[in-house]
Length: 376
Figure 1 (cartoon, helix red, strand yellow):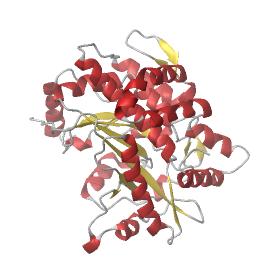
Figure 2: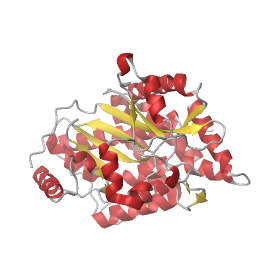
Figure 3: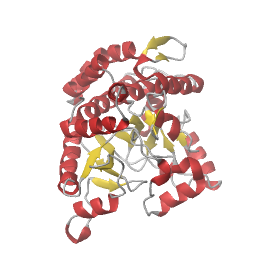
């Protein structure tokens, strides 16, 4: 199979953020995406360019355009959210986000009426119906296809750190799961989701896609829902490992870290340097440790098996990436990662709110953080 990689500007960036539609009175999910999408549509019903449907009708996705900076992408998202609120506020619908909803039941959620979603649910059955989860996807433009697979392998030595920083799904169906990111564990149950395979040559990826297509595992490349994947039609690497941010500030932080990591590894390739790699068994273990322990995870740093507390590794990364952030115009956004190191991640705030209170209070905190645009 020939898998062409579209031309793309180096380190251009785009962000996708999945949002929950919540009933303002009960805090439960509202099956209202069709009404909301119609409300933000343009003349003659043209879809809003930055608001899209998703798998479930309790969800809308806000997407940025192709931008040069994380700040520019965040501004696109904020304008889309403002447009949404003009429709949702009169309907008594609140916007919120996190990797999961604290108490909503998967069995009660309706699927968007699209063939691709119906096919997914028909194939995956019970597990597919559990996909009550929300994420952030960051696209970074790659100017040369030969860089894509080496950069993806290097990112797999740090993707669990991104997962820890963004972890925001400790509750599932009203229960405290004991995981910082239960979303990570649920999503990987789909047959083509989770940790990607590591290919050394583009032709090997093409051969894999050909095998998956011929045997009916997938119909299109987009059905490979890996934590990190190439997006050949856009000319990007798409990092999908992060739980949905509960507020704009933390969205900017993790997106900037992602943006800087990709550019950092691209720089290393330009200098002829060897990029870091790790065997699949270490990568898989890191994903589990991160999902379970979040900011307290001790992760495997490299292929040698050296281990380090996630927060120590991230702190060193921030220093190393400062020059890259300056060049990409996201130094202030990258610095916000330090606030997550100092104050904790979303799952930790949610667990604190839940102590001595019911999960309604957690939902209220998610709604308030979305409106405030920062952690509370």
